[in-house]
Length: 187
Image 1 (cartoon, helix red, strand yellow):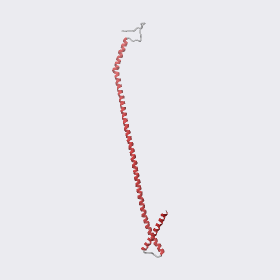
Image 2: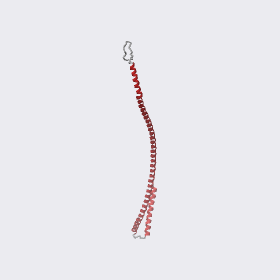
Image 3: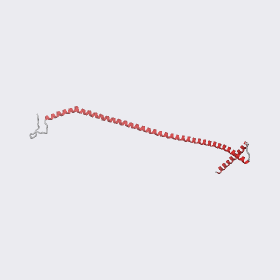
Image 4: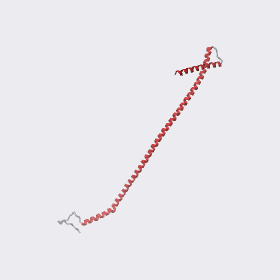
């Protein structure tokens, strides 16, 4: 059953296959095509489906992670803004507290200073009074001794001595008051 196409001159064309070869090739191609369609293509489809699922799952996970990251960033920014506000409030409270403490310390220092000055004035007045008493006693004794030397006799009368001393001190105080008034008037 060989059909050969003869060329016009009666020779066989080697480029054209025979019908049996064509049918054999078509049958083998059909079997290979069937095998590919039955076994290989489903495996490729399965592999492609798995890859697609992995890629789509990865994209979905990436989108979820990106959404979570955006939410975390937003939460972080809110917390940072809250922390900055709280820090500003703490600084302001600290400044106010420091100002209050400075005012309290200043007031305490002024009160302490006034108390020290008052105590010093009291001590000064007490010392002045003590010195005046001591000086009166010494002046009185010196005045009596001086008077005894001037008069040439012993003054034994305490009333007379006391009167002499008081008169002498009164004279001193009067001269001191006069000198203070004249110094105040010249100023």
